[in-house]
Image (cartoon, rainbow, N blue to C red; front, side, top):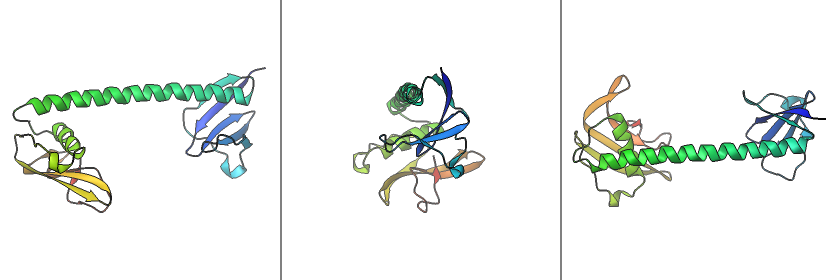
Length: 176
């Protein structure tokens, strides 16, 4: 007889509800068995459970794992498509003699510069003069661009932008 299982994600556990009980299995230790949730652990995690019809909990779990593999492959493909599109836009910008200064273009340029060591930079010419710098903020590389003239960013006029973020550093710069 098939039973309905509802799987939910949390940071540490795979949660499943069936027969009005919640069971947990650690994500970190795949050898651990399913255990019934304590009263203080009982809660729904997430808005969209994966509902599976199966003979047993282990069969349902295998279907759930297969579903996660498909979801991860799709997410990876979407990420690769976004990266290819971003790289194409960046290549188009870098081929221009003068790059127009827009928030999107600044974001592409500053993130491109952040992937390189400042010593290997070949700074592109932009329609507004600028200075670019790179900092090590407790192990996180952050690149900044300071424009000669402010541009509209949201509802304000801003000159200083940064890529990367570390709390307490470069507070006068806007994260882009």
